[in-house]
Length: 323
Length: 78
Image (tube, rainbow over the protein chains, first blue to last red):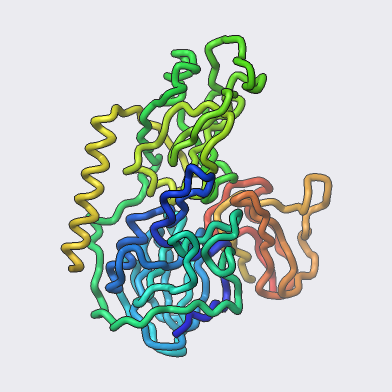
């Protein structure tokens, strides 16, 4: 069976849990930006959690089904329709052969995840179907979906309609969103005042926010501890000789607008990184719209690990609920 | 009268570039598919097009304003 893409939305990409293991070669892990939502969508339709589905940002696609299938839409809140009739998010429903899945205007969050029973079965690259357009890996010939594409889907039995993830097990950003930060190797480059400001100020998501990184603006510029720049580092005080960038690391070019690197980001470069968003909060970034407000919250390693453990418990509870 | 809504969140522009005139002025004829503004999001500019024909009633959202999906940007009188 195939999914016929009638309208593609803004940037709708095939994603799974990504391709870990190649970051040292400069190839990002990729995969769904909101991993809990992608996993939950797959669980709802009876797929393995790492099956490939669609990630659609800000706008939903329009898809014609060529065979009956179970479908679930998770992540952002957006009206879901089958031949114009409303369906719920975070709930499994059936789409029959010939019917059209479409979407209304985004209500909250930023990205929806669409899972189809059997999963999308395009050819994997380096162990993943996730689309990485810059490297032309995964997806449909390495790109986002386009009208006219026919996406292959695996064979799988339908699941019962109405299976749902209870509201208490869904996660989305608060307003303002709170993103917890573990300060890092280069934190010492900021003055004490700058370090305080970073956590005191309210930041706003800038227009430059995508799968590579999210830029934030509106806080006061950060001042650096004066030093003679080492050989090989650029002249700007936010430059270093070069370093590795982790998933979630926060660079602040010129000290003005922090950028949080996300799933399709580069693996290294010459900007200092003041720290990293804790892994438990990375999904929330995938649900931030431009112009929304964010506070960065300073936490220690114990808190970060406790948050990671708590997130694992949430995912386990979803498994048990839908098991 | 019909509303022109943005399908996307982002920043709304009345003009193709800062030095150009707005796409439409009150009283202009509007055909289906006419561009009435741009939404900037994720480093790209997306054209917002009229879905009904008529006479341009005016912008109801300011130039360079932050918008959310579904927000009314302009009106078109039938």
